[in-house]
Structure formats: C-alpha cells, structure tokens
Length: 341
Ligand SMILES: [Zn+2]
Image 1 (cartoon, rainbow, N blue to C red):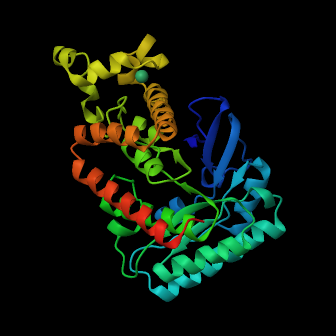
Image 2 (cartoon, protein in one colour):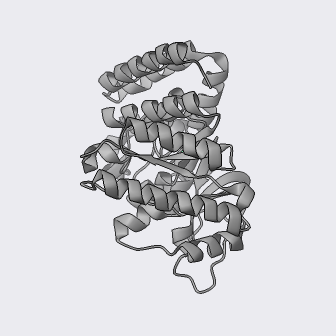
Image 3 (tube, rainbow, N blue to C red):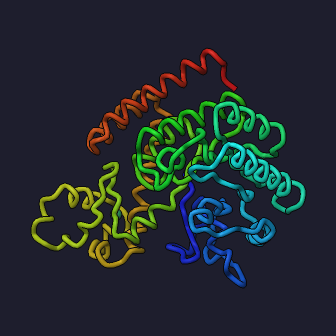
C-alpha cells in the first residue's frame, strides 16, 4: 500500500479515493484542530520524529486527544525515537515509555483497534525481544519500523533522515523486515520511503507491506520535480532553466512530455511557478511507480529486478542495487534456515 502525505494546507481537498498519511504534529498547535480535506482512509502519525528534530516535547494526552478528534483508520501511539550518542540504558528507558503509551492507547483511548505501534531497538537481541513484546501485547496487525540502531550509532547510520538511498538504509530495511517476518505475523509499514521512485521500490522489493510519501510535497516546495520512471533524477534547481531553448532537447523534457498528470498535460508552465502544481505532478508520478511496483510484485521477482536494474543503473546507483539483491538473497537463505512466520 502507498499512503499519500497530506497536511494542514492540503494539496487536494477531495481525497476520498486516496489513502492519506498525515501527522498529529501538524495540528498540535491549533486551538481547534480540524482536517481540511476528506480522506478515503487516514493514517495519522504521532509526529514524534519531527518533534524530536524540532526540540518539541509532545504531551501524550494532547496527542491522543487530537487523534481521537480525527478518528483515523490508523493511529500511531506517541513513541520515543532515539538520537545519536544515546546510551543503551537511555534507549531502553525510552522503549519502556513507548510500550507504556501503546498500552495506554489500547486501554484508555477510543483508538483501541486502530493503533500502529512503532518498533525501536538498539541491538539485535533488543530487536528480537521488542518484537516479541509487540507480538504478545500489541493489539494490531501492522507495525511501523522506527529507529533500529546499534549502540554508538551516528546520525548517518541511525535514522532514515531524509531517506536517501544508501547502504545503511538497505541494511536497516532488510534486517528490520526480515526480523518482523521471522518473529511475528505483523505487516510492516516503513515510513517516508514513498518520496522518490528509488526508495519506494527499495521498500517494496525488500518486502515492506506499505510506505508513505510526504516528501513529494516537500520536494515540490523546494522546486523539485520527480520524473516518471527516472529514479532519483530531479529537475531540482534547474527548474528555472525551463523556457530557455536548451531544455528543448533535454532528457528531462522528454520525460515530462510523456507525463499524463493534469499539470503536464494542460498547464506545464505551472511546473515552474507553482509548488502545488509540482506537488500534483510529483504525486502522480509516485502513484504510477506504486502501480508499477504492484504489478511487478504480481508478475514475479525477475520482471521487477529487470526494471530495477534499469532505473538504478540510470541513476548511477548500480552498486547499491547489487548490494540490495545480495541482502535479499541473504534474507531468503535465513528464512529457509529459521523458517517463515
Ligand atoms: Zn506531470
């Protein structure tokens, strides 16, 4: 599944046919929080990761109250992500607080049957025991991968950050997904990988059941355009060059001419001027990539691999793709040894 990121300042008000991902933190300071769009289904994150980055401390009861007000289909109980240089004992204590909140959400809120707990761990044995705890106590069929780190982790290895495709991301994903599938029967949501075709495919290829894309908006706001089928190539800062004669024979223009989103078809000039137009284009491209991923997963792995061979080579990240295939092979071997679910 792919959940499309939406926010307080919605790109589209009518999202009745969409799966929408939003975050409680977007409404945390509102005196009268309300959703300004209609969602087919709503997945409401708690916003802990963003809060931590911004140095905001979220109050449990307030987060729960906002979530109860919106009554999303899926709600993430307030969790406590790790930051670099935290000691093992601090991380273990934070996990205790995360667990307390999961129980609180289950027992003391109206969100009982809707929760998506976040998994955090600080080494392999905590990964296993934390998963076992969730399997035993969390009343849900889906969990979210949070910070799965090793002691002494750095900013670079610990978090998805802005989720650039790189080895650490592949390690964390393949490792996390493998363990969830081995020790539990949960589905896995990996947050934030639907913002570029490359990370989106990485997630699904490695076995994630769903991801979300808020980055298509952020990228649009920074002047970036996601190109159909073109992996991580963005027009980015070169948007300003549109309209000059040079762009006429560029590869980028060829791709945009093929794009069937309402902006490229009817108002391509808006791509330069209006970030919301870029966001509509970006969303269209990401949804198309998700459709592709879905059909490849149905057809079979060989076809999917052939497609990913092409897009990763084109983006200059062949080494990462080769590494991903190795990790996947390793996952399969360990599955054979340890058994499936
Ligand atoms: Zn377009």
